[in-house]
Every structure is written in structure tokens, then in C-alpha cells.
Amino acid sequence: ANQSQRDFNTRLLKQLFLN
Image (cartoon, rainbow, N blue to C red):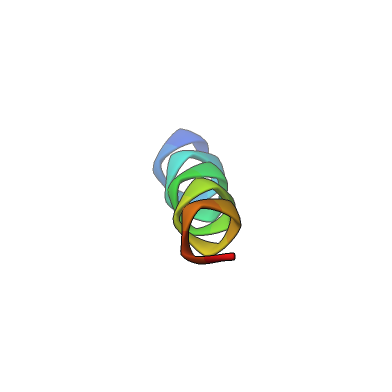
């Protein structure tokens, strides 16, 4: 559960940086 949440946060941050 924690790993999944962490991956989601990382993906969100990456997307924000891409934008």
C-alpha cells in the first residue's frame, strides 16, 4: 500500500515537472 502511494506521488510530481 505504501509503495503504491509513493509511486503515485512520484508519478504526479514527475507529471508536474513535465508540465
